Length: 157
Image (cartoon, rainbow, N blue to C red; front, side, top):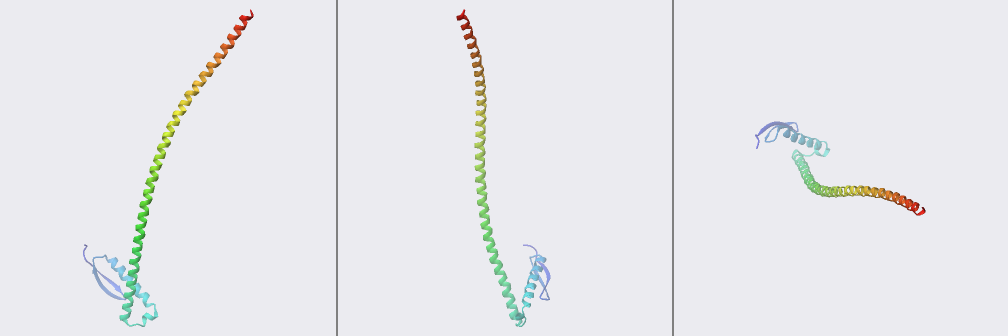
C-alpha cells in the first residue's frame, strides 16, 4: 500500500482537508464531481426551497443513483468484454483452421505441380521419340521408294 497523502479540496464553496492513499488529482476530481452535482441540484427551483438536511439527502440519493448506474454499466461492459473475448477466441480458432486448410491446399497444389512437371517432362520425351520415329518413317519411306524404283528398273530390263 502507498503512503497516505493529504490535499485541500473545495466542495460547495467550503475548504476540506482530505487525506488518503489516492493521488491528489483523483481527490480533486472527486470534489469536482460533487460540486457538479450540487450545481445541477441548485439549478432546480424546487431544490432551493427545501431544508438543508433534505438537500443533503437528495444529493446523497443522486450520488448513489450515479454509482449504481455506473456499477450496472460496468457489469454490462464486463459481460460484453467477456463475449467479445470469446468471439475473438473463436475467430482465432477459425483463423488457425483456415490457415491449416490453406497449408493443406498449398501442399496439394505443390504436389500437383510436381506431378504436372513430371508429365511435361515425359511428354517432351515422348514428343522427341515421336519426332525420331517420324524421321525414321520418312527415311524408310524414301528407301522403300528407292528400292521400289530399283526393283521396277530391274524388272523392266
